[in-house]
Length: 283
Image (tube, rainbow, N blue to C red; front, side, top):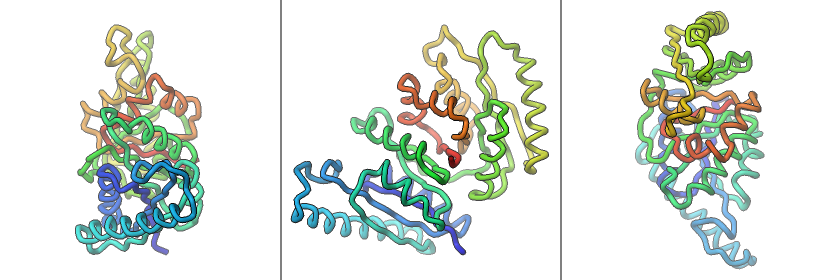
């Protein structure tokens, strides 16, 4: 049975970027794409008054027409992709994880806005909430991202067995990994040579679990004297940029680490100012 990519849209440019990314993945792996839009009285694209029956009906009509146009734009650019669509009333962070429980879905692909956008806090909150609640993996695509590259994959690692499941999940959806960068942030009081030895041992264990052509260490430490590198998220982004990583894998089952990523002090760097697609493992 052909699997389907679940792609939420609010008809914005950033959700269009995510839908195009999903379309390229669909072509690569022969998936279908299901577009879904949730509307509420508070939706940024609609009026803010109470949802009376007449008002609700008008919004359903507006959403139905808009999603058809959205799908048409994608179909023109990606004529070989099989698209379907639906609109429904509800809040994205609550209803999308419920939709994702259906057996045909492989992964959620959704966009996020940069922190300079005035609506970024709300969208970032939705994005992180969906990633936390989803029963299937979630791929978050940064605003206006237009590249589809899967050559160099970065795995956030703290040497936990659950990370092997993340790599296997990713390969099931995206195909084999040719180059894996092990991203690890250590404290300044740790000895770098000791950290590298642990990474070498961890690389061997990963290769015993799943065949990967090349596994490289990608490490740095927290720098308390540097405001741009004094949190885990900021060091991660610096490593991702310097090493030109295509997709970052994050193991969601590591609850404490996942919660730290979305702590208010660092969530801007991880969710709102995301600069490469990030793959969150399923629960």
